[in-house]
Length: 388
Image (tube, rainbow, N blue to C red):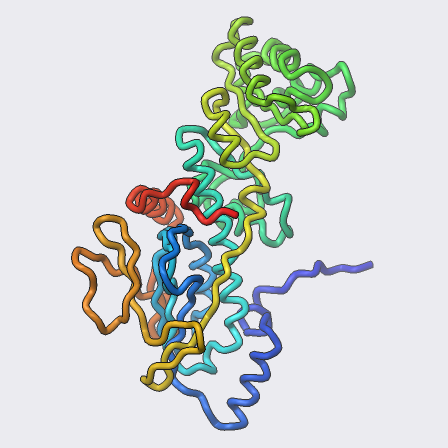
């Protein structure tokens, strides 16, 4: 029997062994030649502004990876939007961080993709309660990253219990179809009552009401079975959904007609920004899964742009140490670091590591607030987010 999962340990990652083989070969070649040049390297997705905004996430783990190395690093703050240019700069002897590149890019690429998708969802339904239900679609070792990135993008909560430690938030959720099925067809009231009587008092009383019969029928039955029911959740399978908006309107109408106007209606199941924009006026909240959790990682690369104080870059990359700015009109500007900044511009590159010591705090609430404020500053919409 296999006792271990196929998971790379944190110790392996920190030691630089979660690397591509060619970095091992690079280290061997440089050691053989007695070379360890001082370099400036930058993490960049696009060289110039693209007009498609991404939300930087994963910086806390990236800093932990670089901690203790004889380098300095600067980075754009976590929760900042960008549409081009570098998000991180590393300066120091190349062999200090050569083998860390693979893990470093992974720590930034995937969370940034997830956070950006979450921000798109937030802007599709800005006044609705939206929870992240998507960690079931990814490798379980990524659950905390998915949920933290979803919160960073502005979602209101998450379902994965193991992510509580990384986020400082309590996971939420009520019942799956499996609970109702365990009581059998026709016995939905028994399932709803067992839930009501068995779970902690602080758990919201939200009943899943589309397991066996019509959504309207089950919603009204649940409201009458549980006193002080907080809400019903409609998670109708796509093949049986039909006009989902009309179903939700029927549920709302019938609850109101039977005197249950205080029971909220929540929707889930394969929802993305377009669906949320269409449903946000007929539902009180949403659970969003794969649209956020299955986001494509952003294609970051790490490139050397200076060697021993001299300009250096591969073909197709912009040479020289760069600065990044946010102007008063919400513009994102990239320029050489030794040149004058644009008028009324704020530098976004801030100290991250000095002499191997992390010099920045990582407060999730502050990053969430920054993301919300910066999204307003740049005029973020679903259409100009970096969705596929």
